[in-house]
Image (tube, rainbow, N blue to C red; front, side, top):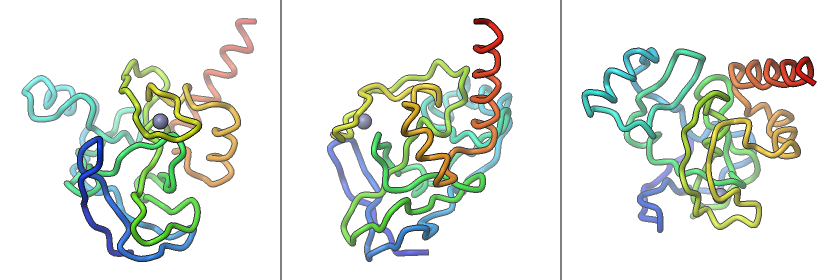
Length: 168
Ligand SMILES: [Zn+2]
Protein backbone atom coordinates (compact mmCIF):
# COMPACT_ATOMS: atom_id res chain seq x y z
CA UNK A 1 0.00 0.00 0.00
CA UNK A 2 1.29 3.51 -0.79
CA UNK A 3 2.71 5.77 1.90
CA UNK A 4 0.27 8.39 3.12
CA UNK A 5 0.52 11.33 5.49
CA UNK A 6 -1.84 13.36 7.62
CA UNK A 7 -2.06 17.11 7.09
CA UNK A 8 -4.39 19.88 8.20
CA UNK A 9 -7.05 20.98 5.70
CA UNK A 10 -9.75 23.65 5.90
CA UNK A 11 -12.13 20.97 7.25
CA UNK A 12 -9.81 19.35 9.79
CA UNK A 13 -7.09 16.80 9.20
CA UNK A 14 -6.98 14.90 5.90
CA UNK A 15 -4.97 12.10 4.32
CA UNK A 16 -2.48 12.88 1.54
CA UNK A 17 -0.45 10.82 -0.95
CA UNK A 18 3.30 10.66 -0.34
CA UNK A 19 3.96 9.24 -3.82
CA UNK A 20 2.25 9.02 -7.20
CA UNK A 21 -0.52 6.40 -6.98
CA UNK A 22 -1.73 4.61 -10.15
CA UNK A 23 -5.46 4.10 -10.77
CA UNK A 24 -6.77 0.87 -9.23
CA UNK A 25 -4.27 0.80 -6.33
CA UNK A 26 -5.64 -0.08 -2.91
CA UNK A 27 -4.63 3.03 -0.96
CA UNK A 28 -5.86 1.84 2.43
CA UNK A 29 -7.93 -0.84 4.09
CA UNK A 30 -10.68 0.86 6.10
CA UNK A 31 -9.77 -1.06 9.24
CA UNK A 32 -11.30 -0.92 12.69
CA UNK A 33 -13.59 -2.67 15.10
CA UNK A 34 -16.64 -4.29 13.49
CA UNK A 35 -19.87 -3.52 15.32
CA UNK A 36 -23.55 -4.30 14.79
CA UNK A 37 -26.08 -1.51 14.38
CA UNK A 38 -27.23 -2.21 17.94
CA UNK A 39 -23.65 -1.96 19.32
CA UNK A 40 -23.10 1.29 17.45
CA UNK A 41 -26.32 2.82 18.78
CA UNK A 42 -25.35 1.86 22.34
CA UNK A 43 -21.83 3.32 21.84
CA UNK A 44 -23.36 6.56 20.49
CA UNK A 45 -25.69 6.72 23.53
CA UNK A 46 -22.67 6.28 25.83
CA UNK A 47 -20.89 9.12 24.00
CA UNK A 48 -18.05 6.82 22.86
CA UNK A 49 -18.83 7.19 19.15
CA UNK A 50 -20.07 10.26 17.30
CA UNK A 51 -23.19 9.60 15.21
CA UNK A 52 -21.36 10.96 12.11
CA UNK A 53 -18.50 8.50 12.34
CA UNK A 54 -19.40 4.80 11.90
CA UNK A 55 -18.47 3.42 8.50
CA UNK A 56 -21.27 1.20 7.24
CA UNK A 57 -20.40 -2.05 5.44
CA UNK A 58 -23.71 -3.92 5.49
CA UNK A 59 -27.33 -3.37 6.50
CA UNK A 60 -26.62 -3.94 10.19
CA UNK A 61 -22.83 -3.90 10.25
CA UNK A 62 -20.44 -1.00 10.83
CA UNK A 63 -16.74 -0.36 11.39
CA UNK A 64 -15.56 1.96 14.11
CA UNK A 65 -12.65 3.18 12.01
CA UNK A 66 -9.02 3.23 13.14
CA UNK A 67 -7.42 6.68 13.22
CA UNK A 68 -6.04 6.97 9.68
CA UNK A 69 -9.05 5.47 7.85
CA UNK A 70 -11.20 7.79 9.97
CA UNK A 71 -9.36 10.88 8.71
CA UNK A 72 -10.17 10.53 4.99
CA UNK A 73 -12.36 13.46 3.99
CA UNK A 74 -15.37 13.43 1.71
CA UNK A 75 -15.42 14.89 -1.78
CA UNK A 76 -18.32 15.08 -4.24
CA UNK A 77 -15.66 14.47 -6.93
CA UNK A 78 -13.45 11.94 -5.12
CA UNK A 79 -10.21 10.32 -6.25
CA UNK A 80 -10.81 7.09 -4.30
CA UNK A 81 -13.79 4.83 -3.63
CA UNK A 82 -14.80 1.89 -1.44
CA UNK A 83 -14.54 -1.52 -3.12
CA UNK A 84 -14.97 -5.09 -1.76
CA UNK A 85 -16.43 -4.08 1.62
CA UNK A 86 -13.63 -1.91 3.00
CA UNK A 87 -10.81 -1.37 0.51
CA UNK A 88 -10.22 2.18 -0.57
CA UNK A 89 -9.02 2.19 -4.20
CA UNK A 90 -7.68 4.96 -6.45
CA UNK A 91 -10.33 5.87 -9.05
CA UNK A 92 -7.75 7.62 -11.23
CA UNK A 93 -4.02 8.30 -11.19
CA UNK A 94 -3.29 10.38 -8.11
CA UNK A 95 -0.27 12.68 -7.87
CA UNK A 96 2.15 12.93 -4.94
CA UNK A 97 0.80 15.58 -2.57
CA UNK A 98 -2.90 15.25 -3.49
CA UNK A 99 -5.45 14.78 -0.75
CA UNK A 100 -7.21 11.41 -0.89
CA UNK A 101 -11.00 11.58 -0.62
CA UNK A 102 -14.01 9.34 -1.11
CA UNK A 103 -17.72 9.98 -1.47
CA UNK A 104 -19.22 9.36 1.99
CA UNK A 105 -22.68 8.98 0.42
CA UNK A 106 -21.61 5.68 -1.17
CA UNK A 107 -21.53 4.12 2.33
CA UNK A 108 -24.68 5.68 3.82
CA UNK A 109 -27.74 3.42 3.61
CA UNK A 110 -30.74 4.77 1.72
CA UNK A 111 -33.02 5.09 4.77
CA UNK A 112 -30.50 7.14 6.76
CA UNK A 113 -31.48 10.74 7.54
CA UNK A 114 -27.83 11.67 8.22
CA UNK A 115 -26.69 15.00 6.69
CA UNK A 116 -23.42 16.91 6.73
CA UNK A 117 -22.50 20.20 5.05
CA UNK A 118 -19.94 19.81 2.26
CA UNK A 119 -17.13 22.26 1.59
CA UNK A 120 -15.24 20.08 -0.91
CA UNK A 121 -15.07 22.89 -3.46
CA UNK A 122 -15.64 20.62 -6.46
CA UNK A 123 -17.60 22.17 -9.36
CA UNK A 124 -20.03 19.26 -8.84
CA UNK A 125 -20.37 19.83 -5.09
CA UNK A 126 -23.75 18.70 -3.73
CA UNK A 127 -23.32 21.09 -0.72
CA UNK A 128 -25.05 18.68 1.65
CA UNK A 129 -23.76 15.12 1.99
CA UNK A 130 -26.66 12.69 2.45
CA UNK A 131 -27.43 9.02 1.93
CA UNK A 132 -26.68 7.06 -1.25
CA UNK A 133 -29.90 8.15 -2.94
CA UNK A 134 -28.54 11.71 -3.10
CA UNK A 135 -25.80 10.69 -5.57
CA UNK A 136 -26.84 12.00 -9.00
CA UNK A 137 -27.75 9.24 -11.52
CA UNK A 138 -24.83 9.97 -13.83
CA UNK A 139 -22.33 9.78 -10.99
CA UNK A 140 -23.99 6.65 -9.65
CA UNK A 141 -23.45 5.03 -13.05
CA UNK A 142 -19.80 6.05 -13.01
CA UNK A 143 -19.28 4.64 -9.51
CA UNK A 144 -21.06 1.45 -10.57
CA UNK A 145 -18.70 1.07 -13.54
CA UNK A 146 -15.73 1.59 -11.20
CA UNK A 147 -17.22 -0.98 -8.74
CA UNK A 148 -17.25 1.46 -5.82
CA UNK A 149 -20.88 1.18 -4.74
CA UNK A 150 -20.94 -1.34 -1.89
CA UNK A 151 -23.17 -4.40 -2.47
CA UNK A 152 -25.61 -3.59 0.36
CA UNK A 153 -26.12 -0.06 -1.02
CA UNK A 154 -26.65 -1.41 -4.53
CA UNK A 155 -29.30 -3.83 -3.20
CA UNK A 156 -31.08 -0.97 -1.42
CA UNK A 157 -30.97 1.30 -4.47
CA UNK A 158 -32.45 -1.45 -6.65
CA UNK A 159 -35.16 -2.20 -4.06
CA UNK A 160 -36.04 1.52 -3.86
CA UNK A 161 -36.23 1.81 -7.64
CA UNK A 162 -38.54 -1.22 -7.83
CA UNK A 163 -40.75 0.09 -5.07
CA UNK A 164 -40.88 3.47 -6.84
CA UNK A 165 -41.84 1.78 -10.10
CA UNK A 166 -44.58 -0.24 -8.39
CA UNK A 167 -46.00 2.88 -6.74
CA UNK A 168 -46.35 4.81 -9.99
ZN1 LIG B 1 -18.96 18.61 -2.07
